Every structure is written in structure tokens, then in C-alpha cells.
Image (cartoon, rainbow, N blue to C red; front, side, top):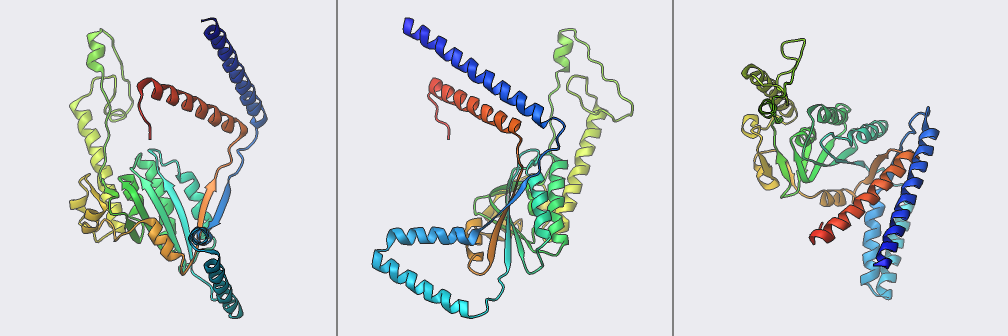
Length: 341
């Protein structure tokens, strides 16, 4: 027992010291960054052709014996020398972007810079491929993300959207801008609809004799409320707003995919890729890996990613948050004997 008490005391002192150091570092970082402009991010560019080549060569070196590998490399060297004597013809370029959407479409901030960068060089002979994953979110957030993609179409640069897992609701709003939509067979697509929900605790407040006043200037400044008493007139107005938003959503999708029977697919339902192909929500069934690997045989494929530079304060905060999350997850999994994947 004495050992456990001493160990607990040591652990508490250690945690206190770590927390104190983190507070000092965060405070120092805050003082340094005060009054400074937020540091700009950086555009990272990698050539996927080199990545695919590296994968193949690694596999060859593992499967072939020394003589076979030597003969293969010699043959490749001769082929490269023959190509070197001829003037190489310029290859088409493929620019690959990624969008992993949350409810606020936070990835839009990076997407807008990536699109600005590629449009400074891309021509109609090139292609942009967006690997999209999103279950949708806020209307205005995904409206902005879709408007960024529309810039590519307006510039006359072909846009292909690849969906491996999900592009629903606001995610499909983005996907429909692509001149070609490619989906994995079991990806989730559709959900062309609008939803809004909120609890109302007015009856609970009344039960405990608690009054809640809602004062507005403008008949429809507040239609539904969490704490106040909702009226039928307010519900009707709220539903009207949803219907208007839904109609705008349908019009937007129809503009970019006129081949759709929009009233049949704009029911809020979702479909797996195989069924989505029949509904003309997508054009082909294929994974993004297959599509890009095929493109890499005839084109130069570049992956673009705009990375925001985080301040010292943000990095320390993220590190501290991550450490706490790992400790809590480990503790909870041991306590409940559950596995987390």
C-alpha cells in the first residue's frame, strides 16, 4: 500500500509538471504570435508516377532473383536511352486533389488555394481529378466548396470526380459538378435532400414554472426555437424555407447533370454505386486507384495539397489534446474491455 501511495504521489507530481510546462509553452507562443499575421500555408506537389514506379520496383526487387532483376534493369536502361535520342513529346497533365469533408466542409480552405494554383497553369488539354469523401453538412459551407469546383469547369479544364466511399447530400452537390463521376461499386451516393432538426424543451420548462421569453423584430426572425413555444405558423415557415433550399439543390444538380430524372433521385434516398449507375448519378464503376494508375501510364500525374502552417501555440495544443485523447481511450478500453478500430 505504501508503494501504491508513493507511486500515485509521483504520478500526480509528474502530471502537474507536464501541465505546467504546457501552460508556459502555450502562453509563450501566444505572446510571440500576438499582433502577427497568421503565417501562410505551403503548396505541396508530388508526382504520383514516381510513387507508382517505386511500388513496382520494390515488388520486382522482392520477387525476382538477381539475374532476372539485372536483366530487367538493363532492358529498361536501353529503352530509356532510345527515348532519350528522340525529342520527348509533352504528356498531358493530371492534377489530383483530395477533399475529405466534415459537417462544416473545413477542407474548403485548402481546396480553394489548390484550385487557384492549378488554374494558373492548367489548360483544357489537362485534367483535374478530385478524390471526394463526404456525407454532407451545412448548406452554405458546401455551397462554397461547390463554387470552388465550378471554377474548374468555367476555365474549361476537364474535371473528374472519384468517390471510393461516400458522396452524399452536400458531398453529391460537389460531385455533380464533375464532367465525369467515377464511383466504387459500393460507395454511397445521393441523399439529394435537406434536413433540419432541433429539440424543444418548452413543456419541461413550464412543468418547473420557468418562463422563457423570445423577443424578435421581424415576423419571421425566429420561426422555431429550442426553449420558446413553437407555433404552427412558425413550423409552416420553417418548412417553406426547407422546401426552397431543396428546390435550389435540385436546380443545381440538374444544371450539371441534366441527364438525371431529378424528381426520381431528389427524394433524400441514397444508393450504392451499382444502383447509382443505373440512376445515372455516376458514369463509371471504378476505384480512384485504378483510374489514376491507368492515367499514370500516359500522363504526368501530380498530387496537390495545400498545407496550413500551424503556429507553435496550435501545435502544442494539438499535441496536448492528442495525448489526453490517447490516455482516455486507453483507460476506457481497459475499463470496458472494448476494442476500437
